[in-house]
Length: 59
Image (cartoon, rainbow, N blue to C red; front, side):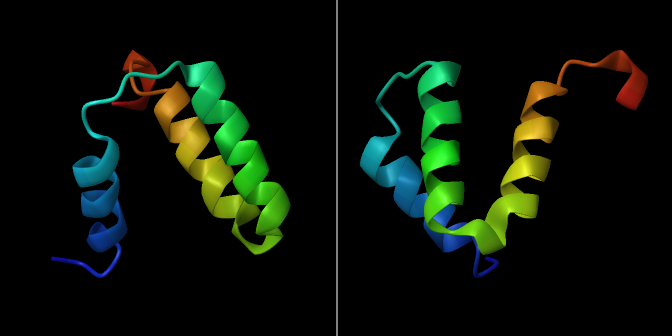
């Protein structure tokens, strides 16, 4: 397991049964970036990747 997987596993264990909207997720990513501007590029890349998951052009 990668070190980064620990946070993902905690998220899944604590909140895996919850449902939320992408609007809520977007707002949480904005808040996180405001509090942690050094992660702006990573958050932007994650958001872009999630937004384009179904794009056939990227395959």
